[in-house]
Image (cartoon, rainbow, N blue to C red; front, side, top):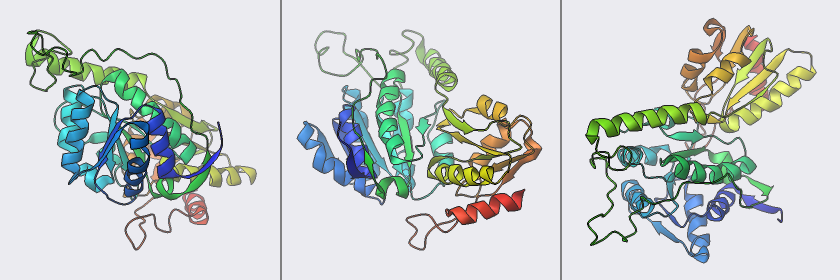
Length: 352
């Protein structure tokens, strides 16, 4: 494959198309707008459909419909728009309809939204948080696979750096293994036979637990997400067991990786830990990585959200300290001065 210089939104659009996405819709909200524009240019050339929806609610429900018909489908927004999608995302999880949601957020303040959600019922959403554009290209394709594998909506958590930076990337289709047939899809083949398919939360468990009624359906869904939580944890780490471990996710983790490498070169016993899946959170891996650590420093650009998960899973909860904070540019559309390597370095040293 040829190395191409692409903006992040263009790279993710190409990765989605290569993964087989053929339906995309959204409502323009910066920095997600760039992805919508790229899909509107590129997807029709691949035989797909891209629609500019009148609202986020309309967009996510059109995506749900396309996915129910068996298409690989996706939508997205920034966190404010995805807040409006929560009911439909919950419905998709509970009636087992797979699609991808791109949250190209304005900052890191949507962690609770991504990992706790705002819908109803016993469900979660697998959420991947890439640290750079090459990883976003991989994660985009992986998420379409995981959505179909588990029949569930999934989330890519990005940010302005991923959306608007240009880097050289290779876009090639990745093979993540076999998938079950979409024999549940509403493709019209059952019409008039007396065996028409139905996908809806109140279908009394026809898809997952036939004949068991609503109780059997809800229990089967809850058990499925328990299995997903155990199977799909992903993380990255450097020097686990170091005296100081810094925990960060997404683009912020890229800065932590750089600063801690400088500090190690100066003689500090310091490592870092990055949850790649925000849910399922790689808790057991964090427990092992922080065993013996005197300092577990949490850096995220919000008031302290992932902090809760780190406190739950760190080997010594009393060692956990927050070194992040809210830091937003005057425009409100990007990060503020806290996402700056010298500032991060100073915060780490002050915490020590």
